[in-house]
Length: 198
Image (tube, rainbow, N blue to C red; front, side):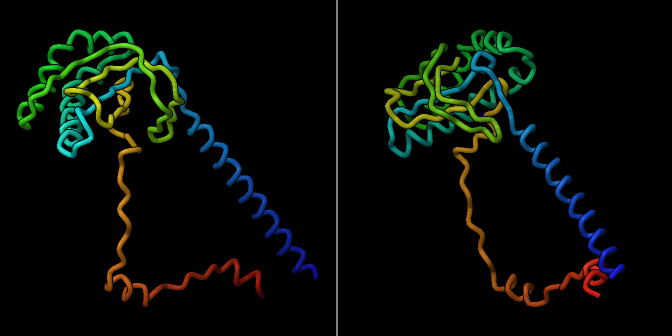
């Protein structure tokens, strides 16, 4: 009887520690997930394709890559939205020239325009950061007629590299060798659990 009471007390104590530990982990996860950036503290990039034709959509992504690669070293040094805005504005001609070079290299003959201002955006998630729908400061790159699907990210602070909405999940494939490896599974046993059962 006394031995069973001791075991029960130990199990309850361990259970309390586990519950407290899980509670702390959940609390920490909620605290770290609460990322908030006011609309006025960021600048978005918005690239609009000429049309929805596959070649125009591919070209849009190439222009995006060139613009981000060009601006990344400059915006990485910016410490404020005002500084980032100044960098973008002072390099407007170079941004357009880089985009036009990509358009020309790919055999397209349409124009490239760049607009700076406040534009309407839908809700968008970047990792743990969720930006609600609304007006945001942005740099818009219009390719040709700008009637195709668009692409956007956050230039400052630089979040373009974690654009989760354009990521593609690749389903896992179970190979025959994996099935053979599963056949020799190891059985884990806890000495504590065995002690409780005795």
